[in-house]
Image (cartoon, rainbow, N blue to C red):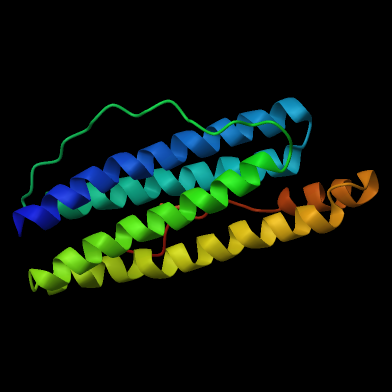
Length: 169
Ligand code: FEO
């Protein structure tokens, strides 16, 4: 595999684990706030982020590349109110989309078509995650200030269930 592509994927593993850590932090915030649905939403999201990291680990291993685990940074978002994690999540996902696109561009430049195909799933996934994150902000803007509506929104988010990724390596 192209060394630059391999290095970028290795570094993305850390960013996916960080994403997981960040969303566990958000889940923790909502657990303390008594919003069990929001807690559930981010707990599931954190699990999915771990899957993303592990898919990249497996992909590198399958291609005979060395995998390096770096330290995971402390989650950096300031959780000042119930909206703050939602906005931080949207910003974070846009950042991750940019990082995935960078790896895709590097794979394209190296004519690494296998990695491009592997990353196709992530490109699509990022589209979904950005939409989910922005939809949640919109719903919170509409309903977050009314206790009864917030309760209903929280109940809706409680229904999200974890499912293993559809991508098979
Ligand atoms: Fe794995 Fe939300 O990006």
